[in-house]
Image (cartoon, rainbow, N blue to C red; front, side, top):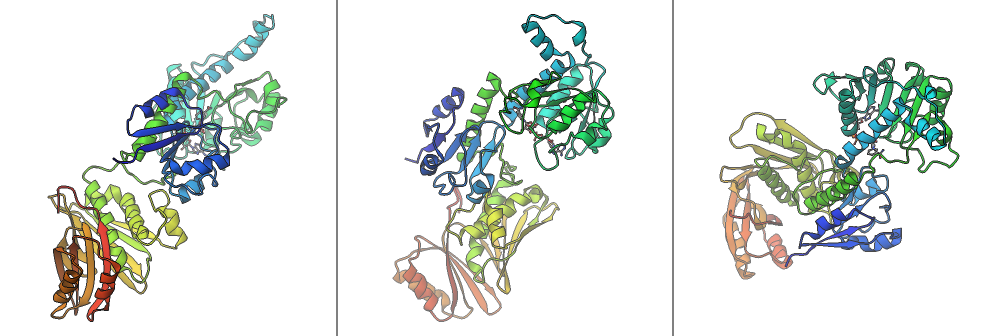
Length: 536
Ligand code: NAD
């Protein structure tokens, strides 16, 4: 019976997610909340997946001995509580479930924008204290006003759609949005933040916090805005400079602000934002609806299981651009590349150096970075004990000074081809392969030796002097070791030859040593590749 997929839930999670996990008979779920760093570190390696919210700290110490752990799923967006560098080094995939809270957060930002426009906060406060003041709280209509959306990602776009429905003019600033306009031309996209500011009645932030976005709205940029601009920040504390915001409110340059997020949460009891009547504060409520809580929980659980069961990757935070959702026609070529790299690795007796992958055929053009990554994984894995995978391979290769590159010959080809070249000492070793119409991978050339060989099963690779009697010597040694030969490929090049033997059982070390000791045999390597289902 195959091992169950073991999932540890480390933070309080909406029951819907746990129910979802428990609906699979091959999944075992343990809920252990409130574990200390040491307690979590001691148990985490017994599980294939860990699900957290923002409470549990997944530190380098927790990930030091990852054991079985392959992925950490954050039910929610921010991954500040997960040490991404440590996870990447250990080959642990980190994923978040950002989509699930997009609408909820956009609705909150829009609710804040409306509340600002109509002074809902201060008016409520006066009413609740027994007062009645109508003239003090005359508002402003949204229709006809201009909203600037900063960050046109999931939430920014959703806010923009709602603002358009209210008759607002919407413009946006997002340096990573490569178009003049969006939403059927109804939103003009600015490439220069400052250039957008002069037209705005409202500005709403939907960007991550980083060096470019920290303090984006400050004294200098406030000065470029129309007097009376109203500000919404439901993104991250720190994007709007708080002292400069308060100064702009005092000076009348800012007409009010609605703030959901703070640099330090919760902000101090006497934080100036709380006391300012022109500031509407909410305690980081953006994603807090029951629908979103349930959705992040079930999304995180579903994403984690999909990854652990090899069904795909969604919401990956530390995968660095690798596509695992390949076109079905590309998939056999990825497997071919993996097998080829595995075969080539033992030929690289001068060590592994820079790697060049050449992909011929338009079918493979969009799979370049994925194939390259799989090739480097398989080259490295045969040489290293620690697991190498899509998450940590780039880092491991960099640490070893191995550079990889892909050349794509983007032309139609009946049988697309892959060539892998590896610098090894003073030499360059290479292998060429394809997948024919029968769907089976074929190796066509190994280091200049032409062949047509399906790479699978237990294989013995030998390089020998091209002289009579060599096949007999090898056959005799295998017979003496009671090892059956299932298939054999011979190829000649100059005064040397190569033999690729498929054998029924893994050769033991003494057989390999005896072969290596025979005169005329130059190299011996063993490779074990998975059998091909329905093939070979
Ligand atoms: P997203 O990644 O879909 O969108 C972010 C956008 O910001 C991207 O399009 C990106 O190109 C853009 N961007 C990056 N740097 C920029 C810059 N210097 N200037 C302008 N734009 C820039 O993210 P999202 O899901 O839309 O989330 C947006 C923000 O909302 C995130 O910071 C997230 O943490 C926050 N958030 C807050 C809550 C809450 O509870 N208040 C809930 C969910 C998300």
